[in-house]
Image (cartoon, rainbow, N blue to C red; front, top):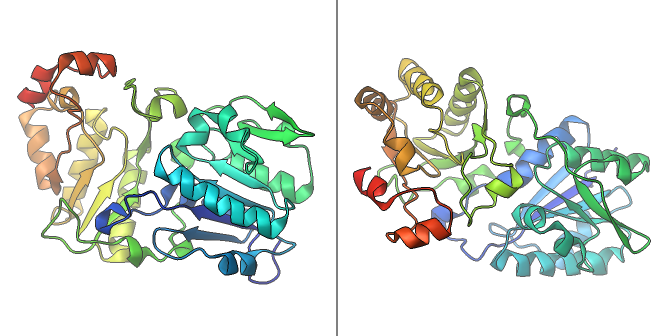
Length: 337
């Protein structure tokens, strides 16, 4: 364990290429995996390249004998270039003595291609909340990495794939460790909630989506399974962040918040009961066919609970393209919505 201010675990979030204004959301991928590591007593630092400079000097000052690993989150696209750039600096500074761990959408969708890169020592495949903690503990205690499900690593030049692991119970998720970042960097006047000035992406109340859209990593990472927090935990999660950061708006990054209408309706009713209807909000996306199943009463309650914007995943006006991308949606359903 750390005895000074040097971290045991350093987590890096590279620039994405779209890092302006309200597009800069908190690095939830890193905050989520950091929570159990913090609870276990390790010292964790998060550096977000979108909001701060990550220079060689800054990284050098954080590297010590107590550093167990450096984790880098990345998705396919521009972020890969920046992730590799950070990994190169880390390798130069540590000469390979500190493992570089890649996680996120790209390593989860193409883990074998990712682990093949010379700058990647370990890949955490899929949801990393549990496997990353086990990895940190194994590196700390020098126990075999092969005992950890959900990772790939190199052993004497050969790649070892430990296989998948069961998806976790989202009811067990820990509170967001906001103390690891400067939250004010992520509170904006939002592109949708233009009359609000303190809007924050507060994370998820559910994970996954039962659909199989060809362009989305969720189907691969979360096995087309939808798992939700209870109504009680969801409300506590939402209300605590509103109060803690004095928010007048927020958005939820659930892949599909409305898929179970009874649960969504119960959350809306509870928000009205707690007098939160003046707080405007929206979710990451809404399917037109799912929305069309809502009753007039459900839509009314949703609006009174503060719902401001519905972002429909129309994707295309061409049925041929929708079918090619496995959207399982008709153009007419989008028009009806």
